[in-house]
Length: 72
Image 1 (tube, one colour):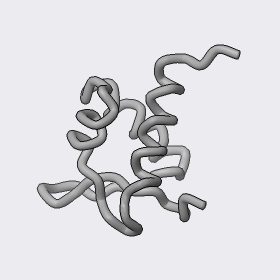
Image 2 (cartoon, rainbow, N blue to C red):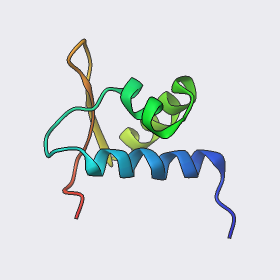
Image 3 (cartoon, rainbow, N blue to C red):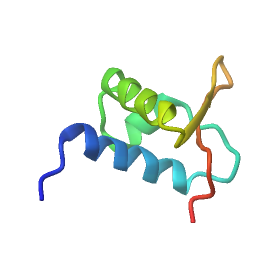
C-alpha cells in the first residue's frame, strides 16, 4: 500500500500532537521542526485535518494546534 506525502505528513503531525501533554497547544513551527516537514505544506495538511474535525486550533502568539479527541 502506498501512502502519499500529504498522508504521511498528516500521520506524523497527528502523532506529534498525540504525544503532547493534554490540552496543550503546539505551534506549527515546533511540529514542522521536529518532524522535518516544510512549514508551508504542513499548514495545508493541518487545515485539512481541522476541517475534518480531528484538530482544533487557536490563533495568535500563544496559539497552535491540538487534538479534539483523546489520543487513546
